[in-house]
Amino acid sequence: MLLLSLLLIPLLGAAILGGWSGLCNSRAKHLAIIWALVPLVLVVFIGSHQAFPATGVLAEWESEWLPDAGISLRFAVDGTSWLFLLLTSLVTLFALAASVRLDQGGRGYCALILVLEGMLFGVFSARHFVPWFLCWEMTLIPSYLLIRLWGGAGAPRAALRFFIMTLGGSVFMLLGFLALQLATGTMDFSKLSDLAANHQLVPLLAATFVATGHSGQFLLGSVAVCVFLGLAVKLPVFPFHAWLPAAYAEAPTPVTMLLTGLLSKMGVYGLLRILLPIFPEVLPALAPSLMVLAVATVLLGAVAALAQRDLKRILAYSSVNHLGYCAMAVVAAAAVHTDRSAHAAAISGTILQAFNHGIIASTIFFCIGLMEQRSGGARTLADFGGLRSRAPVLCGLMGMAIFASLGLPGLSGFVGEFLMFTGVFALVPWAAAVSVIGLLLTAVFFLRMVRLVFHGPLNPACAKWPDLTSRERWILAPAIALIIIPGLWPPVLLHCLNADTARLLDLLRIMP
Image 1 (spheres, helix red, strand yellow):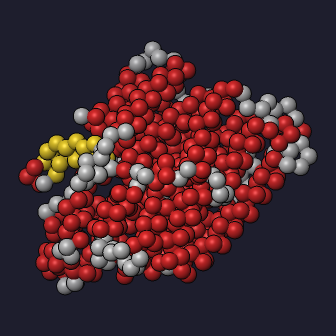
Image 2 (spheres, rainbow, N blue to C red):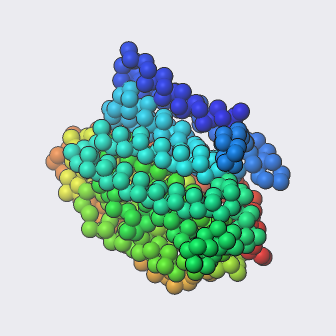
């Protein structure tokens, strides 16, 4: 019941906020923050439990829904899921605190954020496609409304593009799993993974769709492509990233924190939980094409960020670049099944990159939101200059997050990138070598931003800026701690992943 409580508490909070008509906006936001603390406590409590020895499961809840169709509401949390649940609860709380400080939204806005949190909990814990897909699709509604109703002048168009592209990708994914249901009689992730490990999916698909005249290998590859398309839009992978820059730029800053910190991580989680364990038979054949897309995402994201002048758009394309590394590492793990240590490094690095990027990017976007508020809405590189002399604490903390995003050793961003490149260099050397260019370009556009915004003569428009207030420092303090501590002591996060990574490698039949 602990996991069921975690899934329902955000929805209950949203119902209370939505139905309490006499609640003013300020009190609604403070109540939402208090309410969001409860899921965080539950997630920490779940993580403190000893995992079940055989499965590594920390918490589980299951109920029959449509037994005749083999559909059950099955949710479970292992170490990997727990890390994504922890990220969800932390970033949601961070975004709500930022909403209070930046004076964004009100009662309905906070209710939608809590609905989004509840659906994300479902995505990161569901073990059957039907409840997973329902939660996946339901994240679309609050995200669309938050962008559309509280965003900038271009928000209607940005929200519509986000909605259509995400929904389109989901249609392909649904078609793929319907084919698996017809062939196997199940959409349970664990059962499908077991069938894949025993090489049974190909003959089952061939027998079910014999009228098409295609081989089972071709059919399974087609299903894998459909699933990848659905995940690629959320991740996002080039060229399915077109919705992201406008959505990040037009959404209010706390909503942008949710988009970059959580929604993009749904794609990473789907690659690890669905694509990799269910389609290992056909992924090696698809890997060369997918690797080209992943490397293109890394390089083009960095080049596009270099061409931007709007701070939020720079960070938006930087997110495309950083998540491209995750796609590259997962595809590399799917391409070659020879080196267990390299696979373990690539997979563990991907999960760490997803978690750390969620914290780092949210922190930088919050700092940009503070700058935008102080400047009256300005947020281009030309609008600032010399801020270090006027707001040294703001520049120092934001600079720490920027250097973490650059992968500076000693900060959290370094660990995931190091592990990913260690794995990819061993598995697909050419991809790692080319993607190093993306690292160099990332350094160029981030250091250019630091130089133009923090250094040089003080811009007269910023001459009366206050530095961070005590409340703003308290909001940033936990995020900065989460940037420093995993960088200095990576086992604080890695210990959650080791057993899950070993089980995944066993499932993929990757021997030592």
